[in-house]
Image 1 (spheres, rainbow, N blue to C red):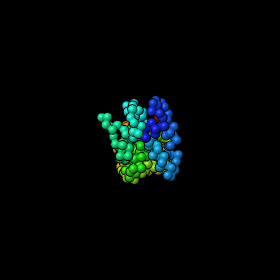
Image 2 (cartoon, rainbow, N blue to C red):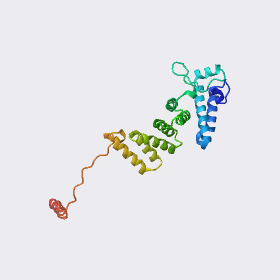
Image 3 (cartoon, rainbow, N blue to C red):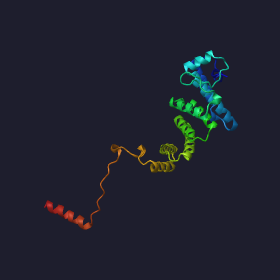
Image 4 (tube, one colour):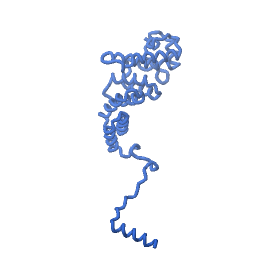
Length: 233
């Protein structure tokens, strides 16, 4: 099955038709709409859609598929130098993670999400996969609790990552959970006290007032009052 078949468009579909088909099918097969075994199937379908769209939005790759035999593999992406990369079934979890990161950097969030889901299906033990998933979910902005869960999973394996602790604190602040956010900020400060989050520029620091003097006794107050009256005389 080639990517045109995956996206259910004809071989001569133009970029706008390809994009519209992808968004329609990605919405239909988004894993968040499913549960249980159906969710697993949806994740696979979602990954296929994301990869097919990644291929066909590239003019060179689209042309190669248009001239290739219909049975061309959907996963036959081109590697640098024009050489075909490993077929989909031979790609490792790290390969999918890298594809996900590239998609995130390009702000192609649906593709990034599809790729990282597939990477996690192949190897859910790698903390970096959960960290990237949290970044994608945070960028997407639709599932902050999912981003929190992914980041917490990462921090179980990397508890000394101050940047991740600060991100988690900010996510909890966004959910109105200030006490929990403060706990993670305190942990981050203990690990990296010189982190930029905790070092406010000099111009941003509040002015320090001199310590207040002790209140004067009643005798001293009377002496002062008498002095002022005597001076007026």
